[in-house]
Image (cartoon, rainbow, N blue to C red; front, side, top):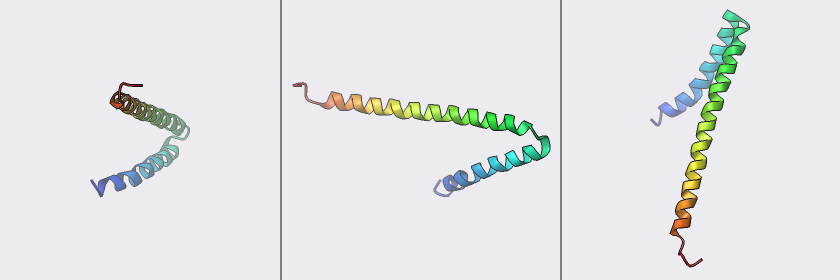
Length: 72
């Protein structure tokens, strides 16, 4: 995993860009549909990521509130 993550972090964007270039070369205007699809998927993934982060922060805050003494 120590080697795989950096390779994936570098090779994935390069592959997507290369795919966009090839799509433009082969199909012309259809690359805009491909770019829109990639943008939509990226937005969906980012929404899920930030929702999970927000819910984890809320859960941590709730646990912190429960651990305080009841004399407040």
